[in-house]
Length: 181
Image: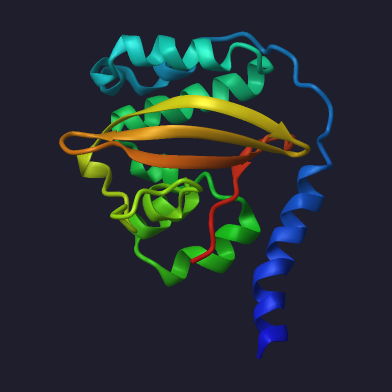
């Protein structure tokens, strides 16, 4: 039984790490519009000071990953659950998404609330996008093919929810590796 559990949990993680090493090179600046502009009127809701704070925290990252993270930030501000749910790494999504609700999958994917590395005692197991105001990135650190980003997800009311996003940033299209329940 323990061996079967290890195969179910460790194999998708190992596969994700192997796949993430494939695109190990630097990305070039492809130019174009700022990532939050794709949301049209929805991005108007995003407070500009939070966007600029995120830009400042991420300024040392290559353009491609910085643009991706700012697009995630805009998606949180616009409450674009469909986009945020689609960011999971393939093997992780296949092994986790169908077993939980969308709200719990969002919390697992972005390692938010109870799934955060430094979760508060009464942190939630779910992330209700209808109540999300925005996300702030606090710090980041590179650990090989994984970019670890610590942040806070602010709700319309109540305390912010801690999150620790694990981005497989060396892939051609960055993906997120969430926490397993």
